[in-house]
Image (tube, rainbow, N blue to C red):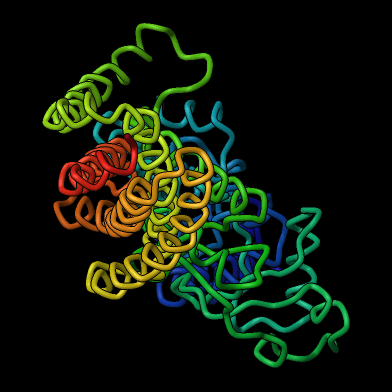
Length: 451
């Protein structure tokens, strides 16, 4: 065998090496997904060495076909210049999937290395809007490829090295979510079987921009501990785990509790007094105006109250009961809207149901109230007045509790926003007007009964 006088390498060996590189180059360019499968099965250092041995264009084709976690491990072993090329030239959503796997500090380093325009674009894609599934998900995903065998999947699982996994998700060559595999099924299956034999259909999935309400709805509907998240093209981008699902429900409930009484959802227990005043004061001023409206109703019957002082004593009873009835109807309707049990087109059914409920409850409460008032006053006329007012006010309260959140949603507002303030106004005005109005109407009978 002769050798090259300059390199010391046999010509045959040089030709073979050149041919191997050419074939590998064509393989990377023409079959990137098959190449990605091979890279995912080897140590990250070897994969990085093979990618680095070829042109950036060829490396890009295979690198962006890798699973995000493998792409990250490979990126960590690549030359910085090649890494920047890959992050810049890859599809932005794929670069974001890799950056999302990083710790915050490592991500910051890469952003400082990238050009300003590219860094700004990737930062914007990473920043999901508030209250959407993307904000709740863990983007550190390690999917399995649909074409794998069980033995390949087990090797992949050893590379992942994450504890507490109960199931893994399966994607196609484009990264689109296609199914799931239980860890137990994977552990017990024959190594030569294709993954398709043990892949189960998805129980549920959500989009990364879906609102938190949809995540909560899915948790209510499906017995799941891990919820996969996909982007607009169906690519698997993250998972929402049980802890985040429970947190989403708790936050949804706590936010509704605050906004229903006019407090800002941004306010926290330790927020500054100035911030709290800024957020609460406008609604308190509105509540003051509504209180004056209720007072104006009472002033319309000033002479009637002066004539029958017992009315002033019983006035809070009617207003209090109607307020409680309205709050119950409001809470049920709010929950129905939040969980998508009802929509705007269901308002006639919801209103009818609450109206009938108010009637039945009103009659039952009126009977108890009438008995107590008779024992106290011995006036059948007063009993009749307060019983009639109780039924009317509780029916109106139930109707208002059902319609207030629906009307707010109809005009494009958050149905939880200060709905209790609006409801309180309605129940006070209707309760005062019905009680005092009926009393004024039957004033002669009250005069005879009370004097």
